Image 1 (cartoon, rainbow, N blue to C red):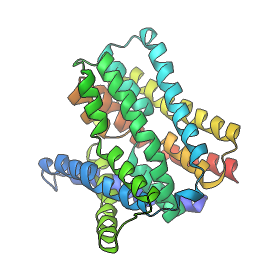
Image 2 (image 1 turned 90 degrees about the vertical axis):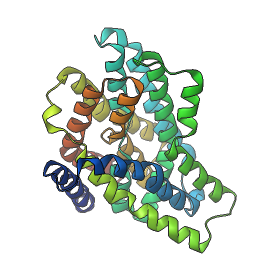
Image 3 (image 1 turned 120 degrees about the vertical axis):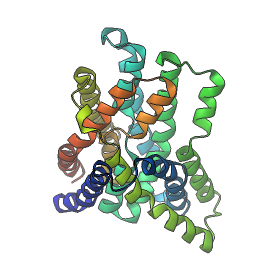
Length: 308
């Protein structure tokens, strides 16, 4: 597992560092990165989810065990933060950024690591994790913005934001094609796999380009709170769930991995668009991504102990 960890994290860290260098050195125009991230989010990553889930052997995966172990910790963490919100000395917009930093996760990191560790099985396991977590996290974050954000959402806007999420749609389409036995025709399958394969390298470059190292010292208390919750409380609840329900092996490793990932760079876009504290969100994303380089190897050691 240690050797696999090095193999998995090496390319991931390299691509993130390259993305940061490309932007800081202005090798590409600053205007390149927002459209590139949009391309990944709306086209490339959904294509990967469709191709991965439509052809995966989902019948052999313990989905009934994975789903509650993934969803339970996220719901409990979000509820705990809401209950203690008034004691945290945070205004509404800042609280939405702490909540996002505590429960949102970076798809590109998760998929890249799962693929490196488990091969084709990793894509299927990651797709299951995303199918459970993407809708749940987006629902919880959207509801938080509707309640605490500077720009309150209507019920219709909340439902529309959830229903049109491209990651939710990609997972749903793939599972539907798999469950009905339709699958993917040879030409379409190859097209989607090729398209989806571009999502991870480009997505990780975008993660690196989004880092704002100078912002890490801002709002340090709130950033530290979100980071502690994200890196200890959430995975700790996931480990407890695996032990309680007897989930082991690669499925358990995938659950713990996805609950341990740094928050997603797309959280900044959501904070800016829906009335959150965008500066606090940028600080949280940067600190968690940088800290994740040191933190994730520890996660893999824990996974190794728990899964044998």
